Length: 449
Image (tube, rainbow, N blue to C red):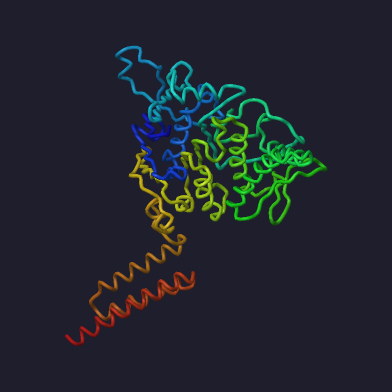
């Protein structure tokens, strides 16, 4: 099963928009779809719509967890009551999952959203399983995260088993606080404590299991950050710390980017570790749907470049949907589909999708994906455009006296640019050399003529 398309009707900035998601054709890595566009173009709306297909009425009614309902323009009943009702405008989201289609619609009675999955099929069974308190055995799962999510320091016990359902609030993009049932800090502490206990008892199999869980998380984060990161329990007081190359830090004083990364990656690993899977499928081979909203928030460009390549290789059976404003994220992976959105006024439409290539330069990505032609800061860019305008005037001039006057003006602007940076100095010197050669040839031709 995979998400093949989503169809919006009168939702937010979309009037009637069908967005198709073609396979990437790569079996050894995750299928990634990157959604780009200006602020207010509906990027997050697409993610919320996709995630809603895996939720239920409780999730869609939760104001804190669901950001889709405010984007509905109209509310209608599930079935039309008369032929007159058929003429009324409707808002709905249709998510195509191959053999199944999920419909999300606005209820005119409660002014909230409902989801119609039918009464059979895999996504319906998943909906039933995710409400079960225990003994959930899955063959796929869906998770949603935002870069604005933060992990917080919290009191931990040596070992405290979790209760409840690991899929609870798994579709909430942002969580204000960690729940008592599934707490990242406690889960990491549990594995570290169990690792120590197993080692003390000589249980090599258990020791390896708990040690590997923590090692996997540490390795993922270390690869993204480009530095060693480890988790360590402090005994007095009992607390969980992050050990980096520079310091031993409490979660509350970690850099924002690091807190954001740990918040969603550790949460995903925790839930996958707690869930039971068909045939005991290893975590990194499971079928997942990940909805990641602006995960580059607060991250240094170096970290932004590392996220998708690592996730793409680790979760090779995942279908991942990402929204971003970052050229470093877009340019970080090969063979991902890029879906640009065009916004005109308050209406958005999808432009033609194309495959990503890490061989694209950042200026190319800025120009072709984000529509940014400028290469420098505002003042320098304005002066550079003035420089090119004067240069073009000189090239159109057929009179030696005008050459001299305009060259003085050009040189004045050029001197400003030369002082700004080595790169601008190189551009100005190259342009001046070419221009002087053209002028000399023009003058020579006039004398010969």
